[in-house]
Length: 295
Image (cartoon, rainbow, N blue to C red; front, side, top):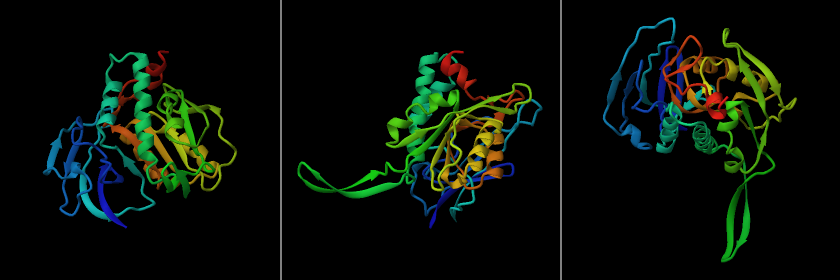
């Protein structure tokens, strides 16, 4: 099946996405060189019907941060199952909640609520054309109706990475009719930036067709999310059955995921251009766990 794609290059990283989920909105800024080209054969998204625009803001690479150069073009190519896809849904509510999260003046309760609302929207987008269904007929007050329900026999495994992942995954059970939640605690050494697993509630084995949502608000250096996905791989989950939900992502993490987990799908509120020497996304939104829980 052919469909309109937008492609983004982060150095050697090559990611693609259907054109109705823009990878980077044209309002992005800082260290990005962005070109958007429209195709006359594509009409699936108003984002790509605007005239060609170019935003060019460059910065030399420094020791304290990872500078990024990106390029986006529209082209007609089939979607490859072996290519990692990154989605930034161009929904105004997603942009709103990301903005609330970015604001350093946002108090803890509102920050946590904004994280939960953002997670709700991203999980809704991620579940599109993905959930197993069952069809049948029911009797409505006015007659017989053909219906389709989410199959309760195949619950989605939701895996929030503690502790910030709890806030982003808060509404999983309200948006997904059938879920099972498995907690995974991973901390990051502040000096080495290496992950340490301190809590693992994953089952020893997942079924072959298990669908898994891994919820990690900040994809910065990629150490934490790679550790989590490796645990899933050891338990029999294939990349094509995993979707990652994040509030903010950065190129170092996306580069690692693209190289190690082909076929993976990532849904994020926004892609920021840099990660500093302490492993924080810039401009980002700070420490998501501290800001969610006030500690």
